[in-house]
Length: 272
Image (cartoon, rainbow, N blue to C red; front, side, top):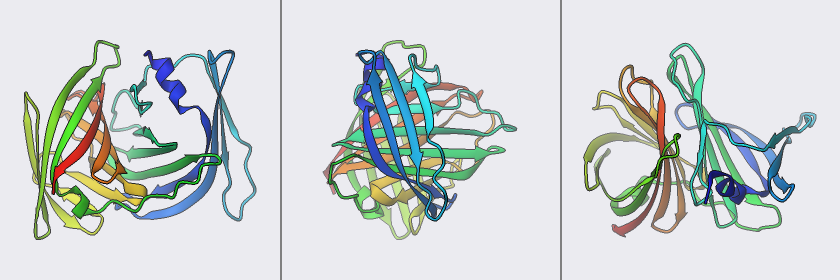
């Protein structure tokens, strides 16, 4: 399945909202939306329209885009998930990414934005296909994260080399207001400790302080508070797919700030 065929999994008439959130994870603006992605010319072309309905304001003209090819700043997975964004970090330019997941006639997209290298918040986009009545999920909680998780990991590359696939094992525990986690694969292991403060978990003991925000609809946002200089880093979003099942997307950058890969992780909780 090539990149275009994976893109086509996102076709549809999507109804939802764009919800802006602060760097602390507080939602402060919600705009109802409709996004249509229609395949034409035997799906050789995709036409996109974005309608926004700001409450109490005149409806703006829809944004219209046409796709015949895909840019070099986006990667799709076989699930239809995608990772799109800046290909190079610069401390003097705006920087960010939008990553999206699709499951059970619903989509979740999350935008992470940085100004002068510092996290400035983002937008949570929750969508469902028109005519489908599926209620929104509850916000993600710390207690849901605690336990043992087994994951299937797939990493795709912008140069379209063959993807890497392997298993992961994630262990998360809690002691007081501290969250401890250890991620293990066949070739490496990472451990970290975070301080829990409401819907925010701050991992500040490493050289790259990171913050995990637990958001509505079972979503999560993980990224550095400030992009580190001359160190690799990643931007991550997560989504609860069902009880004890999560999906995560990571957009990975090297020590020069160049985008080098994107990773999909689908995890299932094995024990609490």
